[in-house]
Length: 369
Image (cartoon, rainbow, N blue to C red; front, side):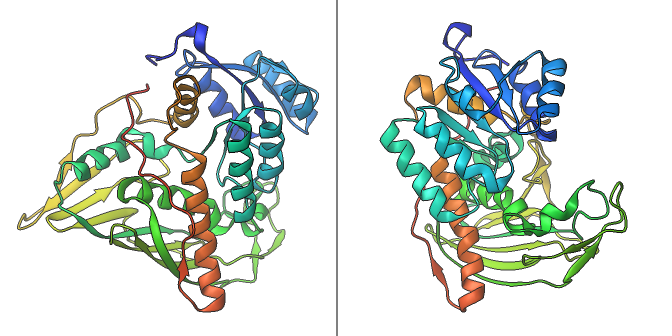
């Protein structure tokens, strides 16, 4: 990475939660983003995970979160705990005067997210949140295409994430059918964040949802044969109206055996744009303009096309030093979280949900890798 801060101005980061995803973060933060980020150390409620991380990455290990928060070298906390713990960990960090970057969702409950942002504002610290895939070269290519007016004014979009769940491949799939997960809370942030980053904030939403299978049988090791009681909706269909007028159709499902649908498409007054999987950082990207007979590939150029997790943290570090607004901001994550809760609320009460939050359209990403 061609860092923008330099080692003398790097932001010290402490990591809370050293599960599987932490290895990718630590690897990227200590290599690609190491001129903007200095990983000081980490902690986890599971002492074995701390030991593994220490041996693998030569990091300092803290006994617990509070020992980490007392370390003046730690300016920012990277919150990689389970979603149900996001609010408590991030609030503790803010109370200690630390900036926070959290894995998605920002919190499980919308009210907790609003409180966290209010506390951060009072404390004078910044909050950022995954996903940061919209900062990758694939979706940034889409952003440039839209900003250049190539497809005209966006008028509609579709977003599909359909599969048959995690019990056939994940080693511990029960979490995905509990509160705080499901297709909307687990995968929705990638799709909704991509749409908001390209078309601006959402005005109102409506939704329908169902729990098709009350139980799931695990067919993956090591829990093969165990049964999961499903607590949350596993098929969600929604309509989103954006402030700028575009309307998006969104389907998130763990109930579909097979499908032939696009990840994301945006339809404009002068053409259509085919977007990549928003859970990735690269392409492909293609466009078909009015009266054209075929889709035309658009070159995706840049170095943020592979697994570039950490882009959002590096951007937050630059914001800490420069006073700028982070792109993968807490405000953006809170807006997306409200939309997801609004879809569930609409399904339950049969009414359109009018959004209370607004967020700025994030500026195009600078080349940070």
